[in-house]
Length: 212
Image (cartoon, rainbow, N blue to C red; front, side, top):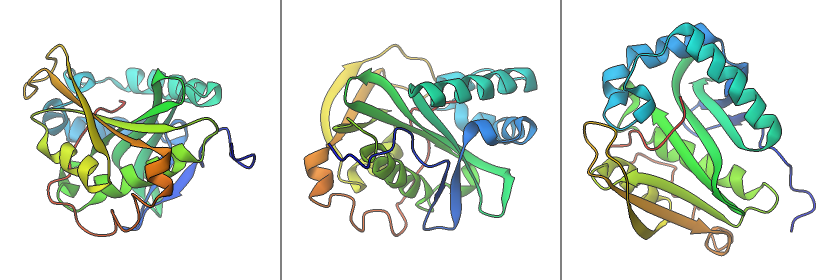
């Protein structure tokens, strides 16, 4: 194991497109809530947590929970924002340690205005690098419904391999109930799987399993 590995990812991660990932618990509640409400119809397609409009109080509670989860190492939540304006929220991303030891799952949602511009792929690539910089992480996963062709394209573009298909309860209007589990292990990562993978546009990037 790399002895220089940090126990938490950076709180600010720049993306090639000029946007940044910022630690979620540092983002203004009203700004995050407004971003979700503005794009609720778009998010409801794939995200179970977006089936009901969150109140400002719920958003504040989730921010507190995100801060606690970050400190415990359970998960690391980010907001996607403009580089010069943390209140211009354009999406949300996270690293979730809910799968098992040594494994971390990437989740993300991207504002509808940015769909098709490669932003989701850039965010997922940045989170993958951050994940493998954490101690003990040997595998990164992306989960998406079989019908979510855009998220599958992101995983494939970044060099993730389809490992298995799991049956899930249908929770959103577009889901099939067949959950694709894409994986990238440390060996493939070190072999350069991500090199050049997210520098350009990725057709049709949108939302995958993510946090609210």
